[in-house]
Amino acid sequence: MLVTFRSKAWSSIIMTHDVATTLLKMAGHSGTVPSALLAADIPAALARLNQGLAVADPGEEANRKAARQAEDAGEPAPVGIRLRAFPLIQMLTAAAASGDDVTWEEGAPVV
Image (cartoon, rainbow, N blue to C red; front, side, top):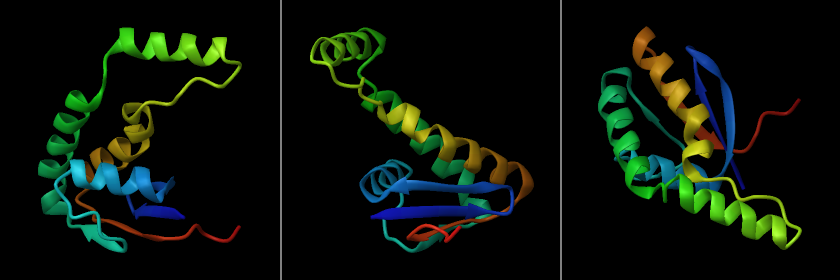
């Protein structure tokens, strides 16, 4: 299942449901889909998300080790939660700067 994040301040972002809810919970939200963050609540949510990511990130050495193990096994390297969070962090930062809300819902837009 996919989750689409929207804001007037940024282009839409699509994430898998499990990654989206993990990031929302790190930001202090319940993880409910659909829902929203009001502009006034975004700076605090962004700070909590960054704190959560700092704790969750295993560090550069662990990331290199995982990448080497995946390469040895002939698999693609794993993508860490911090890298997956980057587009959402950009959206939240832009929304906070412009005073816009961020909403999200299940599904992806039809192209």
